[in-house]
Image (cartoon, rainbow, N blue to C red; front, side):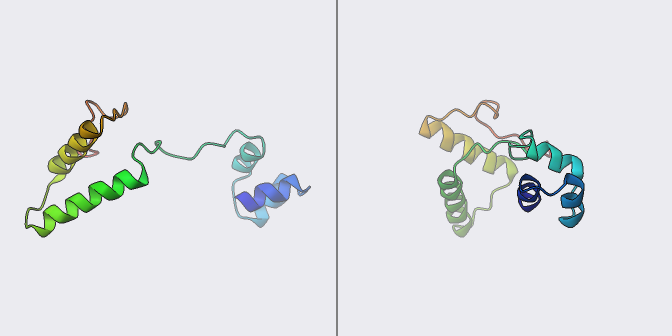
Length: 101
């Protein structure tokens, strides 16, 4: 999509760029106009380092022979955030929501 946007900005028509780069013309129009600048999906709430720390913790617990279920993992994340003094507003009471509950 970025190549198509660059091509339009260099003078190619939106229709020709959409065909050449196999993308929807309306999306291309919005990106060229700056209306599609945000990433798609829910914003990231944990940093890469935080995710790695939590994953390592879960791995250690699994090596000890204590597999965790979804509720346990959510509890580990809540306790980690509480201990760090970080409040994530998209989590209710710092507890991630489960897609399945």
